[in-house]
Structures are given as structure tokens and as C-alpha cells.
Length: 196
Image 1 (cartoon, helix red, strand yellow):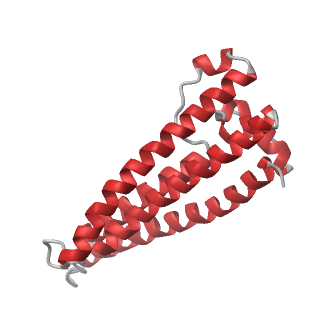
Image 2 (cartoon, rainbow, N blue to C red):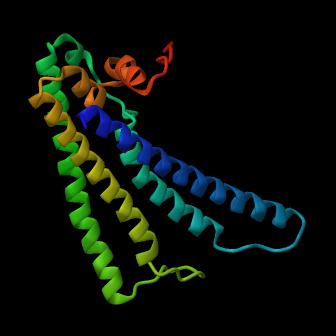
């Protein structure tokens, strides 16, 4: 398998992550709408909707970071990137992925400390639901694990492509969307989307 083949496999898994996050957000929205309707017709309240939707948002945001990285949806300022030869572009892409990996590892280290303290002290939320804090913290931390794994995988695949001097694959894996869209579309067997 080539770096591009592995990248397509990771993107397929990532689409499942995106779907799960979308379903979690839809469920939170449905719960909020149900509570609003119940208030209007005087059936009472579900209770804890704001707390649960906050946990969902925190979890989805952490998982979305890895999703956006794999789909190259993060904002990139590529003014310098576009002006460099392919080797320079690959260097910047590798440096960016290395910085993201380092950042995710730092967040994981400190996030694990918070989670382990919550587990050790059996911490609960100071709310009527008294949610055990390890539950939302585990979901949140798992999202950061996905981000770290995505960063590490993309970094490894980009380095592999660079070592093979496969500049097109390196651009498709780690380059800005503007550089890689035609390459990814060709690999997936579809037409690239027109950008305004």
C-alpha cells in the first residue's frame, strides 16, 4: 500500500467519526427542542438539558479537531506555502503536523491528569444530575486521543511520501485543500469540487 492508500483508509474511518459527532449533536438539539415544547405545553421539564448539551458540545469539539485535520478543514494561511517549491511545501506541511502532534500530546498529558483526579476522588458535577465527571471527561479526552492519532498518522504518511519523493501524495495528505483537491478527487475517482 502507498501513503495515499493509507490516507484514503483513514479518511473513511474519519467519516464515521464525523457521522457519530453529527448524530450526537442532532440528539442534543432534539432534547433541547423537546424541553422547549414541554415547557410551552406545561408538561414540565426533562431537566439537565443544558448540562448534557454542554457535555455533548465539549465532546464533539474535541473529536472535530481530528476530523477537521484529516479532512484538511482547518484554516491555513498558505501565502508562503504556495510560493515554495514542492520540497519546501512538504517541509512546512511536516512542521505543521509535528506542531499539531506536540500540542495534542501536551493536552493529553494534562487532560489525563484531570481525568485521573476525577476518577480517584469520584468527582461529580455540582448540578442536580450529579454526573460523574469521568464520563464527559473520558469522551473529551478520547477526542484528543483521536486528534493525536490523526496527527501522528498524517505525519508518518507525509514523511513516507516525502521519503519516496512522492510530492503529489504528500500534498494530498498534508497540503492545503487548494493544493490537494484535484489529487484527492483523482485518487477517489471523482471530480474535484469547484471552489468560488
